[in-house]
Length: 363
Image 1 (cartoon, rainbow, N blue to C red):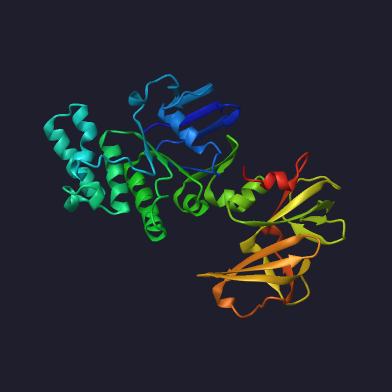
Image 2 (cartoon, rainbow, N blue to C red):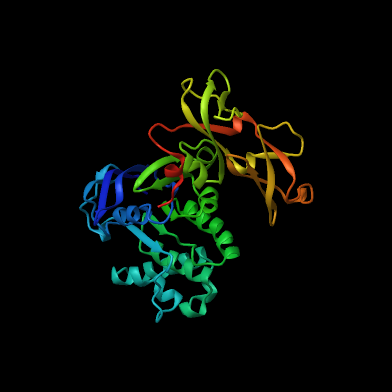
């Protein structure tokens, strides 16, 4: 299966930058998720890789070979969308065999491929069913089998789980990744669902305004984001703005009202204006008056295993904390609380020529 690389790819539509210097690579057999808000350029990247649209500039390489001008059918890359696009008048078996038949494969090869594909996606007993008779998960697996039966070496998935209900979506995350890994097929999966990307990807590429902001393992992207946007898009974060008053060891940041917080050690300049970001899951609240900040509990939300508590801090706005649902009852709306975190769980972002509002805005 090929390595894939996009080199400085640009694509504009009536002044809109769908790809603005896209530059990233995907290793042979790797499962990569392109994660970003609607309109970030994720689907454009997939369609350029598939050869369905031409970039205005830049190159697409498969195993180091420039395929930018190669026809889609010669790239052995298949794009699977959230609608699956199954032929409604064809059975599961007929849908899967569509590619081999139009390519005039020998009958023996077609039958062997069909048996393998049906077994792989666990649809052997439904081979004579029509798409309308299948569940959403079965339709998704049929579309995947049809794509793989054509001999594709690159699998491009455009929000393939979006149309499914929540329970099935979670179940198929594991099935889809396991299937791609067992086939050792290079896979690029577009999603705007951070949980989906964190669970499924070997690496995540966070895309915004047609550019890759960060590409790394799920753990690195989550724990060590490179910008406030990434910090808030991949796991909700709280933010504190101020100036650096200590830079040796843990960084100390103080705001205009004299409130000081600490974050992990980084190379920053004394007096520099920065933003400290802390994941809501790393933000602790306590009734003891010993945290960095003080505020009043404004809202408590119960969401299954987790409890979300919003605290209003005078002059700063809302800070949120996520904690186990077992702590329900320990806090009530109106409680005065303190907010704290371990310094090594907080990240300092330099904000030269940028505002936090602009950085967090989702276009």
